[in-house]
Amino acid sequence: MMRLFGYYRSSTSYRLRIALELKGLAYENLPVNLLKSEQKDDAFTARNPFASLPMLEADGRDRMQSMAMLEWLEEAYPEPPLMPSDMEDRYTARELTYAIATETHAPNNLQVLKYLKHNFGASQDQLDDWYRHWLARTLGPIEQRLAQLGSQDFLFDAPGIFEVLLLPQMYNARRYDLDCAKFPHITRIEQTCLAHGAFQRAYPDNQPDAPQP
Ligand SMILES: N[C@@H](CCC(=O)N[C@@H](CS)C(=O)NCC(=O)O)C(=O)O
Image 1 (cartoon, rainbow, N blue to C red):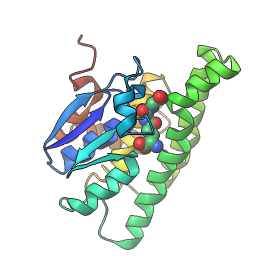
Image 2 (cartoon, protein in one colour):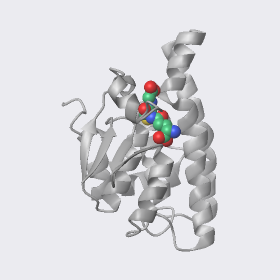
Image 3 (spheres, rainbow, N blue to C red):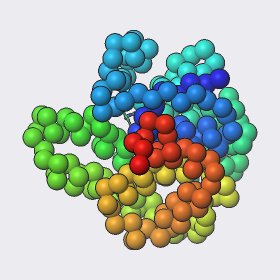
Image 4 (cartoon, rainbow, N blue to C red):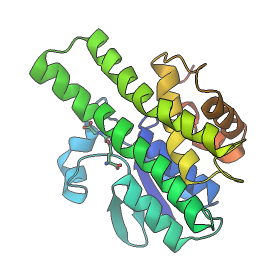
């Protein structure tokens, strides 16, 4: 069985959980506490030099970097697909997916926030403002693209790679009190996904390492 090393609230871990659940693949969930910096423990970095989550142990290999893992999962376990069958639809899915991965997640990564705090003295208010800025900077154009494309419950007919990337950022948007009312297409897709069993099983608050109410 695959072993997923992750943290309940890590958006990249959440990506992997959604993809594994959508594909119906069994996996063991192994929490690594980011707040206690367990990802920097020697035993972990000996396996994963990036010292980041998630890490997927699968088919005898340690796999790191979520986008590479998602592509590998798609190739190793093609059914059900995360990518659309049409080439132009695949292009669109990649366009929106990479916007999230590179233009929102990258500047909002925990390591970046810590660097801003410790090396530039950023206050918590400034960090929150930074976080919301980079979220809105990408969700705005994605909303416009979804309107242009006439998207309904999902980007295309079924949840796929775009939803795998979007939902973790919507969890962050809610956590940081971003005003999402101006994103009707995005929030419709979010609500449809939140009602879907695979997304519910992958949801951060439903993970064993999430604080219990
Ligand atoms: N490019 C990496 C980024 C992974 C990443 O940023 N993971 C965060 C959690 S969402 C992390 O482990 N951060 C560790 C740290 O801040 O020290 C990927 O997509 O897998």
